[in-house]
Amino acid sequence: MDGLTLEVLSFDGQILKEDSVEMVNIDTTMGPINILKDHAPLMTALDIGVLSYIKKGKEEAFIALGMNGFAEVFDDHVSVIVNTAEKQEDIDLVRARRAKERSEAALKSGAGLEADLKAEIALKRAVTRISCKEGRCR
Image 1 (tube, rainbow, N blue to C red):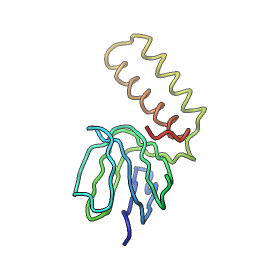
Image 2: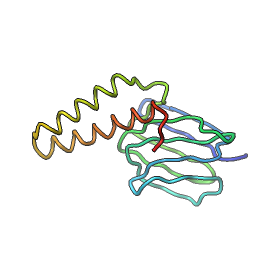
Image 3: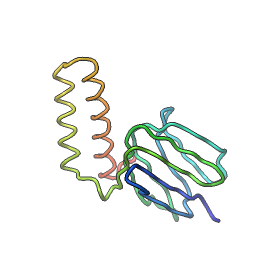
């Protein structure tokens, strides 16, 4: 097989499966990484962020990843398992912008540490979804 096989799974089922992928870009809890063919075996926790991949020399897709996920790289197969994942074309930009506004308002309200942490996570998810929809990977 030429290149990587990329598979993205969420609670909703298989989001994506692609063969012959040249490079996968993904946000981990330790920062962004790029995965190429013959990458060393790896298991890593994922951060809220955008996954993109390159196939035939061009970026093919952006997928917004939610929290609580991990990626495994083994034998040129990249498996991404997350609670939530949305393809770029499935993201409702108006809804994402509203979520961003709600999160920013919640942060300004000063409702306490726990509420602030939840609002920060929601804000990061909303910003990620907006970036993904607009085609900005980083």
